[in-house]
Image (cartoon, rainbow, N blue to C red; front, side, top):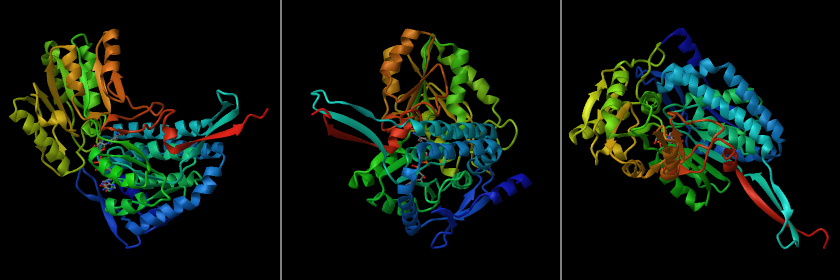
Amino acid sequence: MTDRETALLASVPHQLFIGGTWRDASNASTLDVQDPATGEVIRTVASAGAEDGRAALDAAVDAFPAWKSTPARERGEILRRSFDLLTERAEDFALLMTLEMGKPLAESRGEVTYGAEFLRWFSEEAVRVQGRYGPTPEGTGRAIVSQHPVGPSYLITPWNFPLAMATRKIAPALAAGCTVVIKPASLTPLTTLAFAALMEEAGLPAGVLNVVTTSESSAVSEPIISDPRLRKLSFTGSTQVGRALLKQAADGVLRTSMELGGNAPFVVFEDADLDKAVDGALKAKFRNIGQACTAANRFIVHRSVADEFARRVTERVAGMRVGRGTEDGVEIGPLINEDAVEKAGSLVADAVERGASLLAGGSAIEGPGTYLAPTVLANVQPGSELLREEIFGPVLAIAPFDSEDEAVALANDTEFGLVSYVYTESLARGQRMIDSLETGMMGLNVGVVSNAAAPFGGWKASGLGREGGAEGIHEYLETKYTLTPDPAA
Ligand code: NAP
């Protein structure tokens, strides 16, 4: 640990942020945060109990009337100031994320830019919430359609993008006039705590943003979700947990947004520009050490170019530097924990057992730290588990196809529908893929699609609702239709 790292970690708040006050958990519990590159405990933070969760919701409920009445321009300006502060402190936030999550520093910097962009985008959207006014078709009345903040919202975020997953929810919620309680993942609570301190500095009134860090997610969340004062649940994480939370939310008929798991197909047609396809493949697969919901999970490659594609990606993967994310030139950091290494490793073993060829990697790298060597598998056979499950690790698995219809059938053969990637030089084929692939997002000759100005979200079991874009703020708004008599009557 360098002096800079030690000083940065010491500067991060370690308490719950409730009603504008930093405080310990009421039962004095704590949770340890580890650096996955070393296994070392780098900070200990408060671990909320159910009572603290309730107090955080109380604070959000109390702050709601004043915040929703705050002019949209003022709300937007606080978001814009937060954008400026975050941009100024990009290096600190990037290092903090690398320390608690493991991704290479260059990628953490990219996440700060992406995460900050939601603050800027929704600072601009805050003032564009509009309604409609017009005569009814019969001419007997006037219809007014207006938009209103949905109310106190509960936000649950995962560990893989500690900053961007938080700002992608906080920014639209606050822009819409909602107050929030956010619960970051227990593996990566530090970035959210540091971000809350930044928003406090940007002038956010007490109670508008409340943070509960906890090792007891379920015990803290259940009473919040079942409280009738809560009006919205926004969750990003696994489909399994999303399903369980939807069941809890059903009792209160709670508005929900769900950003869940993915199993992205990456289809390379025989007419693709192979150099571009290989570049896109490496980004779509190895960004975030393969731990992204948007990570390409299945490389579906036309049989006539499959060997050449495999040869080129293997050559590039062999040259990838693995190590602690803080070191220069590292492209592959550690996986988040031992379980993640075991899970990805067992998916590789299953594919090989069923007949896939292992072209690179395939095994864990001895610690300290939880590393899996970047892996390439070719000729993956139908029925292999990694075609069905999210790998969530640096494993590039190639399966060949013979016809366009077969490629579409393979790509859609999953319960998930978050994102797909297609490489083809044919415009007509690209257009056919837009119509055929059952995903909420698509990269057409592009390996990364995320953009704050675009609606991010999935079809099928990948989720409900959209984050970002013009759509993002509507997740936190309710529509009201009012009928008034014809003024001439
Ligand atoms: P996870 O296990 O589902 O956890 C996500 C969040 O839910 C964490 O804050 C976790 O807290 C919390 N949680 C877990 N069980 C809970 C419960 N019973 N009640 C309330 N909260 C609970 O997912 P993850 O492993 O952190 O993240 C990886 C998954 O997220 C992948 O499937 C990935 O595809 C998905 N993801 C989706 C998107 C998207 O936009 N679609 C983006 C990023 C990630 P603890 O940490 O305390 O368990």
